[in-house]
Image (cartoon, rainbow, N blue to C red; front, side, top):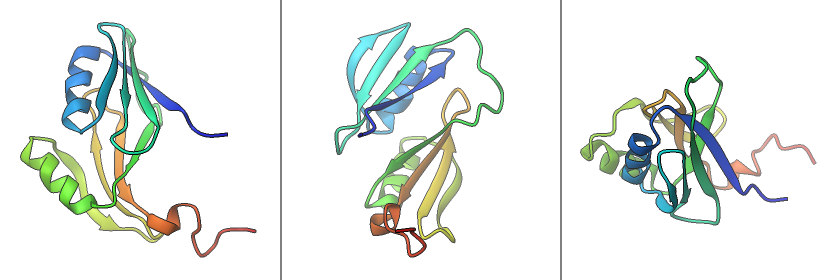
Length: 125
């Protein structure tokens, strides 16, 4: 099995679309105001947004996007006006992460894990 896509809710798909285009995702399906789908800039994963009338608080949605040049990406996004809740930091689980919220409050984690993403030292055999 391979992960095809993640779909998140949004109160305003048009505004969310502009936010994720600024993040660097490539729009491939445009059915605004109800739905959009993006292709990630590397790999084959896609990312979708669908319209909802209400978003549950503390939904627990976390979206992870990996980038080999995390610090450079964060700097570029900050220059475009993206606000981060946490700047890049090395974590105890051997990933380097930066965090932000999208316009609907979904947590976005930009990270670089390299080999440790699938093969951390504590991986079970």
